[in-house]
View 1 (tube, rainbow, N blue to C red):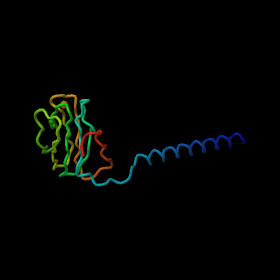
View 2 (cartoon, rainbow, N blue to C red):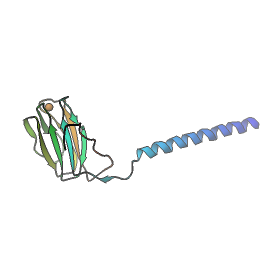
View 3 (tube, helix red, strand yellow):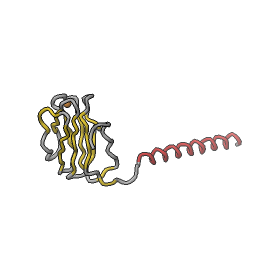
Length: 139
Ligand SMILES: [Cu+2]
């Protein structure tokens, strides 16, 4: 009888701990309601041969500025509906903007350095903020 009560208390305590843990996890998973996507984002093509940030989200009709540093790069779009024109040639020490009018996911890569890949997500709303490009790039 006494032993039985002890076991019950242990079970209740464990259940309380589990419930507390799960409520904390779900709280961090929902970062609040989606907000409108920004109209502009900057992606840097860095000397370390990477697009940074690797993925950005903009609203339909928004603009992504590709900021090229001292190493020459290009941007070729691989997927997505009605993508903007590719940025051809070897582009260094310049910034070139492209406008995305149709919602969707646009992957792209540098034809000079095929390991350089990135993604532009065009959506009216987003739950995430775009990371800032590295210092020295963009506005
Ligand atoms: Cu490149």
